[in-house]
Length: 228
Image (cartoon, rainbow, N blue to C red):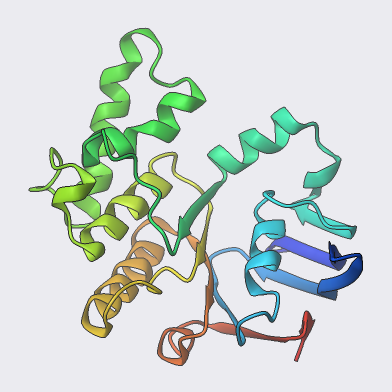
């Protein structure tokens, strides 16, 4: 049985900066197996976040292919790729991107409402899913708090709950503890790996943190846009 789930084939990403071409990602190929945890490790400017964004359908490669199962996601129309991002992928970023005017519960509900699950009588279903997601990340008592009333660690837990509400197969995390102190970071590590076990997630984590990368099953080290 082929358990390769997400793969990149000779992908390149070239930006123009002041008229010069900058290779952010330079000919990377990789395979990610279902249910694995993968760290993408490297110094600032190595191309880690660019690679993650291409894997997640957020940023089209200049050349090469990103395959989800047997589908080249950048050959899909925008609507099809948006569906994959919302349903099959979950995203967690360094900055939590919570909407300040909404409660934690309302923030978590957003992806499911955008997908259309909140139409008509299904709003209550989405609310129940959001409540369960917040319980899963340990925030049962903070559901009605707004982002300004939450700590950094709590805000990141809300962001993780939001990322899993649509029951994604893969969670793509870009420096998920970059804004947190070491103790809070450790609790977020435990949460991510606990979710991997409980709900069968595939984890891909961009980090410069050797402690976090040491917990993953696979490590991909980048330097100057290439696999080191």
